[in-house]
Length: 196
Image (tube, rainbow, N blue to C red; front, side, top):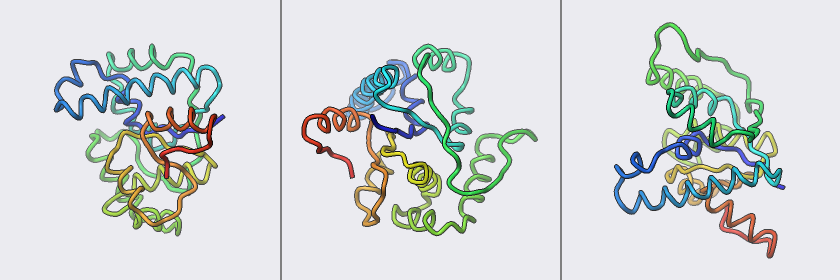
């Protein structure tokens, strides 16, 4: 059994329609379709209790902004019966989540400001190692590490490439849903996989 932290972009992709994917360039569209099929495999594995899915606070907040009526219904139908457990934040912090008429962009700016002020040594180490303004990505990685979660699945190519080109050792494996599906199959037979 594997513990898996699910990035919000995985939830977003799972509920995209073919028409929504059609707007992407052909090579990206095919990659996203492959990942969407792998997400369905992960959902099936979770329903059978072969993997356990987790989400952190920031992902839950991000998810609030994708919940229009049609996507909420698609998510509910697709993920029905799948438990996504919560992990504790990797460090103590607080910020405004909603209210006061703030828009998503303003809330994102507040989040970025709060995370950039974080003094947690490991958080800063991860953020620096993966480069750029990657505080939200460092938060996801640190959430998984501190919760003892083995995998972080995402469809964020920049994050995956940053982790793979970084020299920092991580206790969580970061990759695409399709890689996790392949890893689980390979692990059961040989104990190897594409993850870093």
